[in-house]
Image 1 (tube, one colour):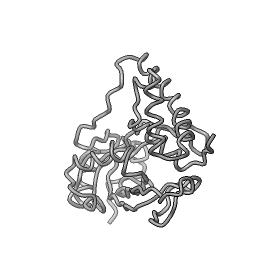
Image 2 (cartoon, helix red, strand yellow):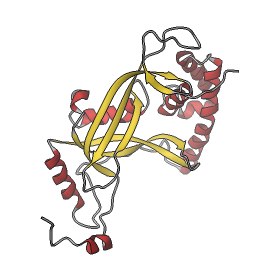
Image 3 (cartoon, helix red, strand yellow):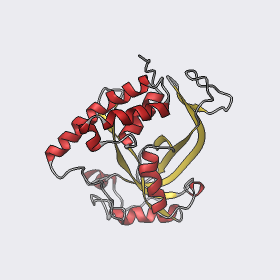
Amino acid sequence: MTDQTLSPWDTAWEPAQQSGYWYGQINLNAWFCTLVKGQGKIPWDPNLADPVTGQPARRYTCIDLSLAPITDQPINNIERSMLAEFGEWVDITLPSAKEIGLTNLQALNGAWVCCEMAPTGRTYTNSAGETKNATTFKFLRLFENETACRAAHQAARGGNGATETPGVQSQTPAPTTGNSNGSRERETAQKFLKPYVENAWRQSGQDLDKARQALAQMIAGQPLLAKYFTVDSPEALELLAEMATTDIPPF
């Protein structure tokens, strides 16, 4: 039965403001993959040889996640795909899943959650040529079922026009420095990081392990880069993964 007290005229005049907290059911799939230039992630085959080295193709673990928001948040499914070995999965998504009480990955599949899309620290260019900040899942709450998830969302909304809060304090990464000069310096360093990663990738013969070793030496030799980044920084790891799936010719 339609709620006669609810008027579309009223909700259109005072719409609920979305704050970036999403409630819904998370679904995921984990599968072994390998990285192929120009193709990206493809299913791993132990009999597949690396076209550059001739050695068996390196195996990675791909995690595909999709959040189906509750109908009170009428948006399309939010989807992300990432590698389990490094990057945002180990830095943001996996730790947050453990913090809300999950003890294994299978328990996350089909779970009702509240999450936010946290910045990964890297940027990308969309089809319109715009530079965007990349985001990934950060889980904030785990619910017993859909009813509990919807109830938490309604309680957080507080009515039309209210600011939505998930009932827990969201942790925002602290800035690298306490002043704008330091922030600008880090941004400058990050701009130089990608060319160094590309050079390391080319010099390594497009071998990921050798590229990491070469990049570590390059960063160590550049004080500005070394001040803010290491070879294991999320930004460096994401760029290395990008090189492995992009047709970057050797020297």
